[in-house]
Image (cartoon, rainbow, N blue to C red; front, side, top):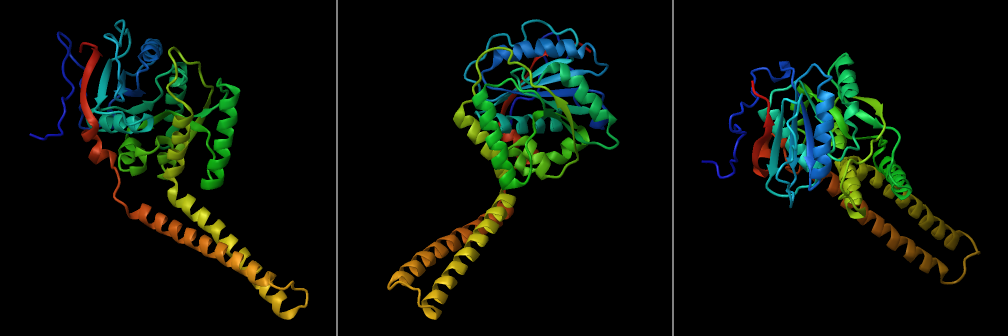
Length: 348
């Protein structure tokens, strides 16, 4: 028996779970909503209630997968009342806390391998990704001439002023280092054929949206205003936000390394020119102050050697990052999953 095996989806007493397997998953009309959760059960419970209201207006079966990212607390009843329209609510429990983005990666891998569906919708569990925008995203996805991942382009935001200023600073740094603007989050719809392609993208382990763009998968955007948090307190702090930003930038590590290498190269050329100017003044002019040429040349030479060392480090970093064996969602996701079970399943 595989020591890494976990308990598969089981049947609730007196309840038949939805049929989750299919020979042609993309032909299944089901839409699966993937929601990572860490101790945020109050907001998640309210979110499920609102998703149930939205599901009642949609013709497609809607299944919710909650990815429990190693929560330290959990209420006895996550689903307080029986949903009227949702096909089911599944709780996927991870063995440890891996962080928001990695929980999304594991949830997507689980869905890809275990649940037949037409599309997967990714959203946060605090309500700031408004459930009322789900039909808009699905509609945009189905209007595309060819399969594309549809992201909600961030519109009006409701965060405090200091957060918005910090976010703008992050966008500037991200653009300078990667050459790409940041205007989307996790809220998105993935057609199943593209989900299967995404499962071979190792950068998904660091940051979902950045991995999609780095893998050059087809992308569309639709403007969606941010909603209000439904309840409880956010677990994001300054450290978490910085780590989140660095995770997104790290996906483009090769681009960042090359850009920094170019800047270092330009600085090295500038220092070399300065060193040449010192030698020229010392030898061919009478304007030199005794002893200054040696001091200036020494300082410039030290700076030049330091920049050269940094440049070599970045070359090694870029080449190693492209050859290093990394996490593959399709291969490694099961090692992080402890169990999955139905919180609610509609009889069939």
